[in-house]
Length: 268
Figure 1 (cartoon, rainbow, N blue to C red):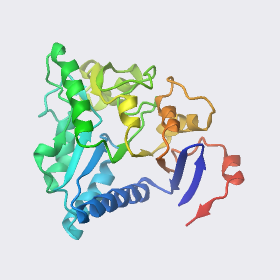
Figure 2 (figure 1 turned 180 degrees about the vertical axis):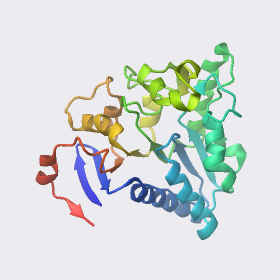
Figure 3 (figure 1 turned 180 degrees about the horizontal axis):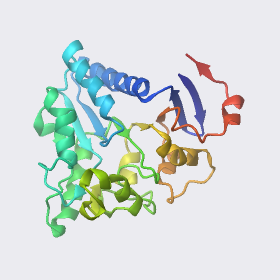
Figure 4 (figure 1 turned 90 degrees about the vertical axis):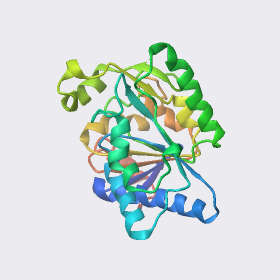
């Protein structure tokens, strides 16, 4: 592992996705275990897609093999496709239950996922209620993020504003193209999603963003430019004081090697 920093963001570079996922799962495990010992709840912001799957696998193993309890855990998912039924195998509701929730002792009343079945007129009130519920629980303690090949975090696509809140958003063509295979083609891929906003994400007490593979390398490289820009929403993370970005070697492949040479690196 290599540790280094750039502005407000601390980077951890691992040889592969499995090692990086193990590191993240241990952070989450430690946070839950610490709060459980104090009889406190833990509020997690959760991501979906390919990136966090191994993190969730390792958390399930922590529950089964080490007795980690999720009974005091409250979760808020970043986003959901719209429109989509929760029973759809491509919904993030289905994803979360298959990949985490049904394997641990979390109370279903503590699970909050944007609703992809609402009438359009009901979405603004739903989004406001989602924001209020996060505040009601005292904010997100630990926000887990992935990043899209176009730099989106959640489904905050290029052009999203830093003051954006939970809302319905039109998906970028690149995002839809990346998802098209699992939906059986671009024509079947949703054009919209409900997502936490940039402002919502940045309110989390700690943010850990993971990136695996060469398809994420261009987005990661934007964090080494001075500019914070809505063209690359991931750059808004530089506005947060507690961000760790966990990478594998392929995701870090476009970072200038000179940067590593100039920094005081710690190798383990």
